[in-house]
Image 1: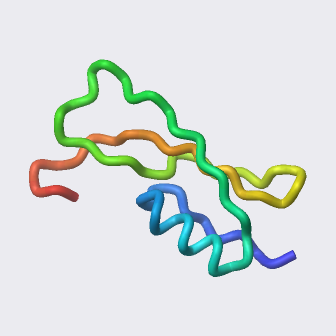
Image 2: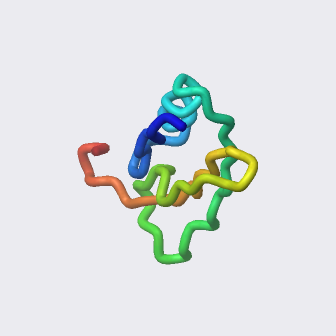
Length: 70
């Protein structure tokens, strides 16, 4: 089996594109953001795991962004 690309920290669309290009099927779980999350945040991949059927599961979490958008 080919090595699974590490996409932790990627934006969800970028992660899915990378994994599908490598031949994997992707599913996403979206976590609820905490109540204390600042207004300036974006979704990122917080965890990835290989499921028994060969699908890659991505946990999408909201992370704070710096004021300059990074």
